[in-house]
Image (cartoon, rainbow, N blue to C red; front, side, top):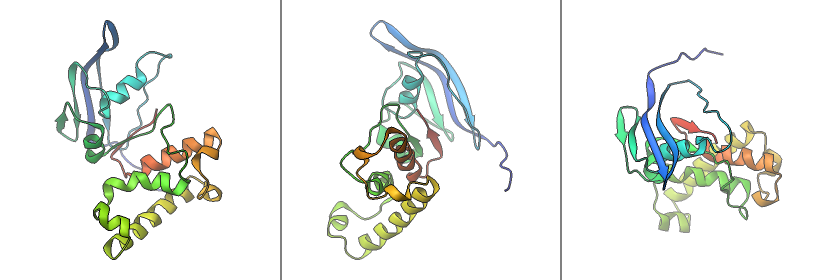
Length: 183
């Protein structure tokens, strides 16, 4: 296997501060992540780890500081815009569609990659049908990678917690992110 070298900075978090009323969740936090690098944010419960990830992926807007992805600084971005920029996220508390099966949950991570419009997707004809087949093939490779083939058509709500976490990871991987945040 070819060795991947640590590359340029792709995510820079600079002087982030976040408060909820009088409670300071984050105070002057700075770090960067380079291409092919794995970083961890550690600390006890309530230390602000999830809050930091929520700032990066646009759920929270910090009161101070900047977040830069591949040279583009963003603030006041919503989660969809951040996802379009290439940041995907799993959640500490699962946010899956419990009534949908594994394939459809992971397919929801491909939504931003789809070029056909909602009407074309609804009638599943022509370009939309071909596009869906391509995305489903991509999702099947993720299912194989995560070794959840036996559960592909099982409603996610019926799976044990550990398998649901794999589905959550699969949905994030389906976005083909530049940065993957695991909470």
